[in-house]
Length: 127
Image (cartoon, rainbow, N blue to C red; front, side, top):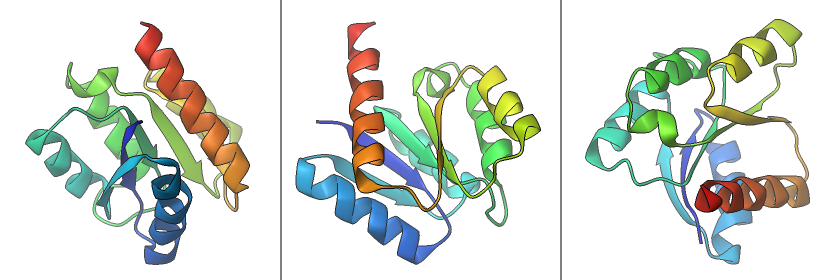
């Protein structure tokens, strides 16, 4: 299954995401903000999907995806924004980066998260 990087500052949300993804066979690596996520990517960029919040300290999700785009290897990893933010400007800006494949609003249903991750994983493996 997929190797997933969760970029989320909330412990409870990270735990929830892990509790949804681990039982169905996905591997999960955690980062509490964009800076830590970049560090995890430097260690190994073999992730299939990144799940990223927007509102985080030190480096927020929008800053992270812009930085992700600046690295050829990281820019190939499809990203799903998991956030409470719904402003059309943010969604448009995120999708224009080319790395954001989906936008999930918190709180999300586990079935929607699973289906989104599965779809993106399948699409990535087709190309």
